[in-house]
Length: 493
Image (cartoon, rainbow, N blue to C red; front, top):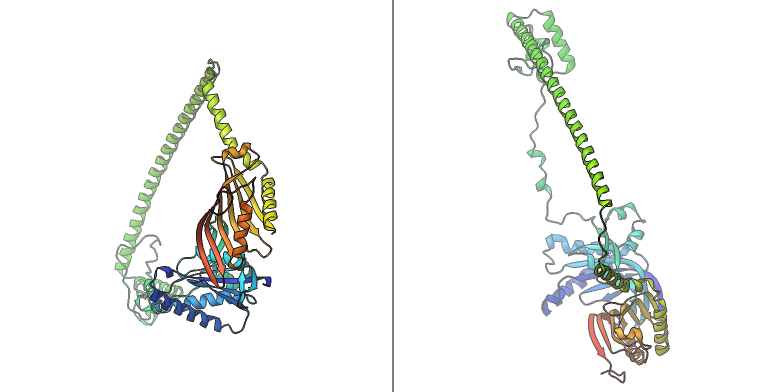
């Protein structure tokens, strides 16, 4: 089986609630999904891409043009959300996009297939999205945001999220989506016809009246006409409401040239007397306010002096108390507290020491045993261990075989306490989490497992499998669990 490694953009779809539908409804929803996806891909034209049917969705690898992934994703979602989701009421999807490495291989039918971490990371990014949302990884964002400012503005950073395997993923959400057809956002904004527009108006008071004091009598707003065309004298208060400053000056000149009637003079005299009364009242109010401000400042100053004196007295008392405590007789040492503290330190050291002791030596021994038994290379990404409550050795990101037919997110080796003081280290439980198996190499992997278990120093009693995934002939089985037991002869029991 020939294989080649490359970088590709993986677009991962997941139909929400697909497994809970009836069989007839699943057929209808899957036909709708396939037709929409085919239409979106046909709009792109020719291009090298690989399509994997995952049962409740699909994974598409774009080899040449990474931007095609976001084009297909947005077109697909717009088609589903159009007409307020009425056309596809049961078709709800979550979408994830990731740019990463894949391996292109030929299956038993001679068709192109893809494997690798790029597909797994795209699925994990999709897992963070909600219904009808599109999430992308940081690697894809770094690429797409450099193509144009429009692409960069389409996404919003959602932070660093952890998947079920405690791996960190920096993700972005697509936010550049217009309103769904049939929905209107105008309900929260008033239309132009609902706004009442009023013409501004100006009230001109008599010349002797200060600007901040209103006249005793309300001003009269004259009808819109030209006061300068009237042969009779006019009052300043009767100027048009929309008069400009220049017209106000002209009207003031006309009023000065024409003798004012006695009623106007009386009003001005009354207004002047009111101004004097108001000025006198205001001066008295200011005097009272200043007096109150002085009294308040004096009270605050006295209070501050009292607080300062109290603080000094308290500090002096604390100093005397501290000196008295120094001269007190020391209490006898409580030996049971010393013993309890020593026991606590010893217990904590059992947790801390494995973090300080280099674990790579143990991992190298295990890798050497696996290589000798399987005749295959092994790669271990990270090693950690503990002593309590039971000794455990944890291996992360383990790959066995040249073509990576077996990949483990995490392998936990559980030992007994007695193994710490013996030459042999029997493993009573080997917990394999996140196992990814190439179906074509399944018989060979089973034989590897039997050979690894057949070892005197590291004899395995039980193997537990969780969150497994089996890929075989375009068939993907996920969330596999199982258990294998070995007898005294180290054979499958």
